[in-house]
Length: 421
Image (cartoon, rainbow, N blue to C red; front, side, top):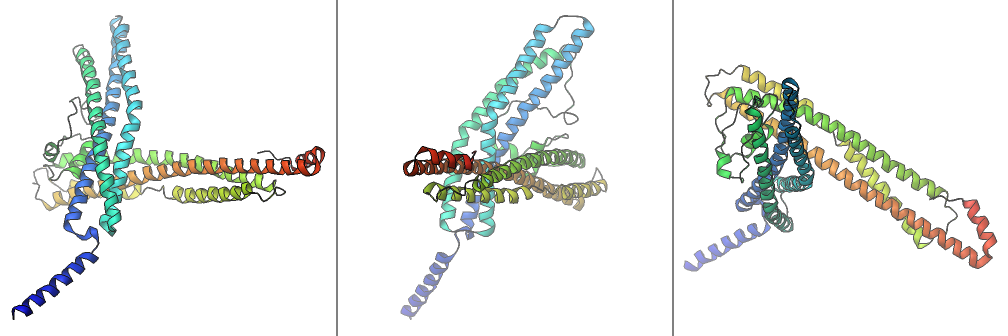
C-alpha cells in the first residue's frame, strides 16, 4: 500500500515538473510581478526626467513675464532698471542654456525607459523564452542603476536655478508683479523638486489646474487614486484637449520632417542608379560586387522608411471623441455626488483610457521618428560606401587600361565614360 502511494506521488510530481519545465517563463506570477515592478520603476524615471525638463521651461516662461513687467515698470516710472533687467535676462539665458545641456540626458532617460516598458508590455502580453526574460532583466537593472545618479543631478541643478528665480520673483512681487494664476494660462510650481518618493505620490493631492505631469502622475502612476472632484476632472479634460492639439501640431511637424528625410534618401537612390547607368563598362571587380550589395541595402532602408512614414498617423479624432464623451458624462454629475457614484467612477475610468491612448500616441510618434533617423543615417552610410566602391572599381579599370594599352587609349575610355561621382 505504501509503495503504491509513493508511486502515485512520484508520478504526480513528475507530471508537475514536466508541466513546469514546459511552461513559458512569463506565465508565473513571480515573473509577472517582477516585470511589473521593473515597469513601474522605469515609468517613474521617465516621468521624473520629463517633469524636470518641463519645470525648466516653466522657469523660462515666468522670467519672460517678469522681464516684460520690469520693462513696463521702467517705462511707467521713468526709472532706470537696466541693471536689474540685465540680471533677469542673464538668468533667463542660463536656464535656456541648461535646457540644451540636459536635453540629451533627459531624452536618453525617458526614451530608453519608455522603449524598455514597451518591450516588457510585449513580453507580458505574448510571453517569451528564458533568453528574452534574461535580456529584459539585465537591461532593466542596468538602466535603473545607470539613471539613478543623472536623475539626482538633474534634480539638484534644477533646484539651484529655482532658488535664483525665487529670489528674483520676491523682488518683482514686492514691487507689484503678480504670478499668473496656477492652471489658467500658465502652470507654475515654485516648490523645490524633491527625490522621487513613491509614498508621497501614492497619496498625491491633485490641484484644480493640474499640469500634464500631474495628471499622468495621479491617473497612471499612483497605486491608489486620490479623491478627484468633478471640477478637477473637467480641468483635466481641458488640459488633455490642449495636449492633443499640441501633439497634433508636433505630429504634423514630424511628418514634414520625415517627408524631407524620405525625399533625401530617394534622391540618394536615384543618384546611385544614375552612377550605375554610367558605369556599365566597369569591370566586375570585388568593388563592383560590393557596390551592388550596398545599393541593395540602401533600397532596403528606403523601403523600411516608407513603411515607417506611413505609420505616423496618430488617432487624434478618437481622443477628441472620447474626451467629448467624458465631458458629457461629467455634465450629468452633480458637484455633491460622491466618489462612489457610478458616473464618477465611469468618468475616471474613461479619462484613464484617454490618457493611455495619448501615452501610446506619444510613444508611437517618438519611436517611429527615432527609427526613421536611424534608417536615414544607415542609408547615408550605404550610399557613401557604394560611391567609394565605384571609385575603387574605376581605379582598377584605369590601371588595367594603362598596363595593357598605355596612356592614350585609357584617356579616351575615361573621356567616353565621363563618370562624375
